[in-house]
Amino acid sequence: MNENHFFQNFITFTASVHQLKHALTSDLRPKNLTPIQYSILEYISVNQPVIPSDISECQQISMPNISRELKKLTEKDLITKHADEKDRRKQYIVLSKEGKAIMDSVFYEIDYKLKERLHILEEEELLEINNAMDLLQKKLFFSK
Image (cartoon, rainbow, N blue to C red; front, side, top):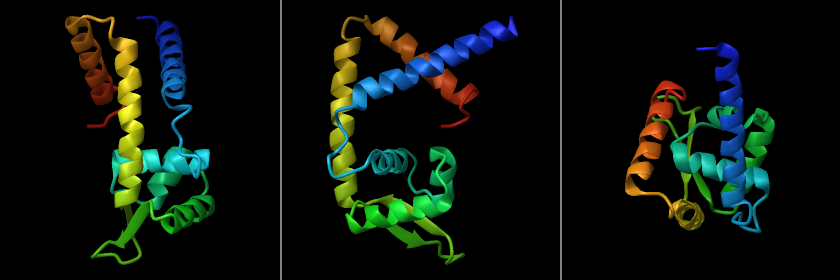
């Protein structure tokens, strides 16, 4: 396979994923959250429990800025922190009950919008897309 063609397909694909994510979520961020705070909540929701350095690395935000945003999310009762039993310096972060409720509501709306977008596809096509996403997670993104 032509490596340049593969790379161009990858760039186009990832840009399309970002555009779709924006289309599905652009009007769903709760008004009391900044875009960064929402992005952090979304990351925690999908990956919890997480440590601050994981968030910093994934969101490409410095640790001091992540710490400040996590403090704000804690003050809003959207996340909770608990120390590792073996290493008390290590803090694990999860969504609070209220944070989970917010993200469940957002994900419900995303699910609805996605179903609207995909309703024209046959069951076999949906299965094919799902299998392709599983393969990408396993072979490219190295997760789950």
